[in-house]
Length: 493
Image 1 (tube, rainbow, N blue to C red):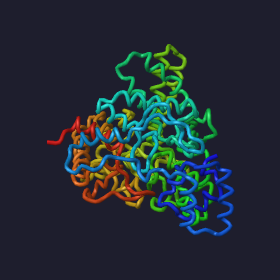
Image 2: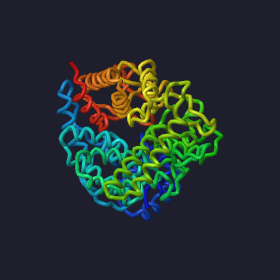
Image 3: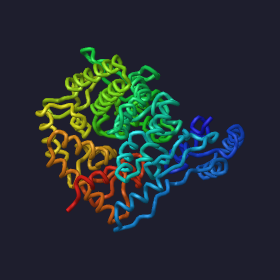
Image 4: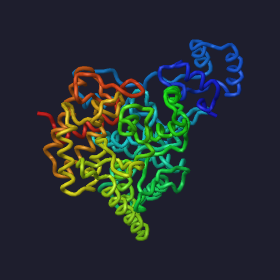
């Protein structure tokens, strides 16, 4: 049993906003058995306790997590590479020891967490962190990180959002194939072949073969693409009060709302106008009605990498099967996600049966994987220059909603995918301009504050980033990784 399964204490504490962040409670460790805590709380609950008494009860019966994952103190004006080197040490976690009542899923090897409130490993974040670890000559930690993800997929049949039990009902953008490529490039084929089982398990999960998910959708011509989905349709334990309060503002069926919120969390873009029916209000979220272009590009990469792994293993039949799957997915992405009117790749809308109208940086992902014609690449580059380019890089979307995955915010992984996609398409000048603007913003902010942030305001570069369900975090794994890559390839004069 774990705290988020423990009613009514869990519900009472979260809805009373005893802690500023709902994630605090679900990361607590019990000081005694849940049976004893349950009996004690039954007595307290009969007295109608206020939030202060609730907090005292939690502190007496649980060990609270640190308020923030420890990071090194800011060093204003210092050397950013040295700061990142120190951050890798402080963001490092040693192999976990299983603890009764903990929500932490133990990992067998060391790992690096993102920072701030994120005290555990996160799936898609980790790929960008691994880029930075490689650039920092810490290949051993890169290997540890990949081994931990293989462990998770072996133990649970998929890689969860993060290594917490409350994340087990969903995954995150499937970047395992990118991680495998990062660690196997230039090595003998047998090394790639050794990951065949993990890659196959990842593919089976996303194709709904090994879990009660509904990631796969059939399109009008019989093609199959994927969407984000969560096995559960209940409030997220780590954001329980926010989800419950949002449900009070709408007449929508609660389960439908909660599943769409959870699916957006699986996307990593939690939250964005990209998922909103009216483009503005969170209660109109409809994630499961959209076929995300970036997700399907990642799954194309998974299928292509798995085909090569089968080839390296000598399995010609498996290779051919996955090559056919990748080719079919490529054709479907081209048919359903390209918008000739916008000159951009968009998510496919299952309700309107056409490309969506909201433009976001997800539309650059096909360039990253080389899934575009030259004319499409030129059109996308033109749209990026005209509409997305800002003083500090590229904005996430063209809408300002107060959600963190919208304008004016920019995020390291999207800068990386955009820059690399443009380079692959021959748009090197624009790629360099974006990379240098992002690097300058990161370094200027670091010199001023001593911090490397989770996200940045790329429009007003002197303003702190906003939006989202929590305060902007620092540390920060994927920012460090992308910054190191850009500093190497696009040094500032």
